[in-house]
Image (tube, rainbow, N blue to C red; front, side, top):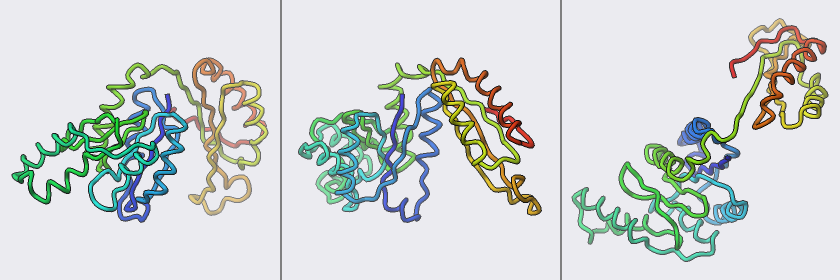
Length: 267
């Protein structure tokens, strides 16, 4: 099963904060036999967020969304989700009760301005479900397999784990995946395009990939010797049984094309 990831926040796009979500979600999903299919970085722009969420709801996949569900004027994700769904924004009673507990635990009164501001974080599109927040009890929300989480990694990451373990455990490790790859010396990427097409034609279900670099560790190199490729094959499901045969074919073909060295990688 595949998931998307939307990472929202001007602070990330402007460079004042480093994103920590991509580096967390990819291995989180892989550890459960799931996949991260795509990632979007989006600004705190309500109109743009509404359009992107409309497309995502229409696509029908499972998506994690981080950021923009706070109570300050630059937080637009809650309102954008409601607009994308065509639903009114309503104060969620259970979410409000969690915020009231938080306010009282902080030694504030429910009549204070701080609580009034904080209570806005209980305003969601009508009909959503809550995602518990073990950090401070201020909930995220879920609707149509879209899971809206705070921007703070300390909150978002355990909440995402809860979502997966609560709603998707039946999908864990349901699809076998294998990969073979190696570092290839002495071939430019242009030399292996036909081989990649050939492999994908001979073994349907196997995908090829190539990541080229130009070596700068040895300035004296020239011509084909300057190039290094990470070349590999990926397979899912029944195609995994064909991977060894396809890889043996690929190695032989790479040597025939002039690869000076093939160094297997640990996949």
